[in-house]
Image 1 (cartoon, rainbow, N blue to C red):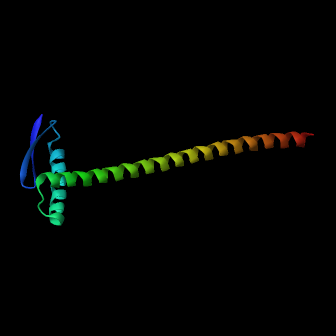
Image 2: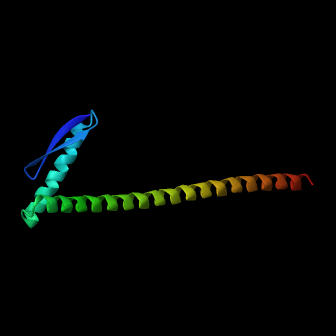
Image 3: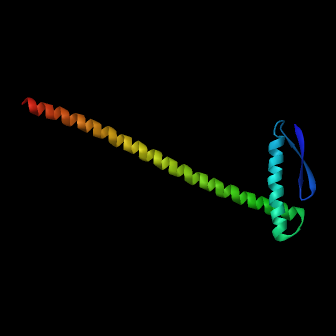
Length: 111
């Protein structure tokens, strides 16, 4: 385990993480700091706790929107996949029908 110190709103927060995850955690900390700075710019300095709650709500909203978009995309992909399967089934049925027609035509020509 490693410790990483994140600075958010000029306060240091030490967070433990798995070895090798330090840079990833620092990057996440920078995202939070950027969001907090945006909030300070629009709301002013309203206290660390309120800023962190607001930043968390904004990130949660983005995550929810992203999950919904991903779910919609998955549903569309599933529908396209089902449509493709149906097209393949129709194509197979048409090939079978064409083969039967050829067989019947051949039998008629012999008569």
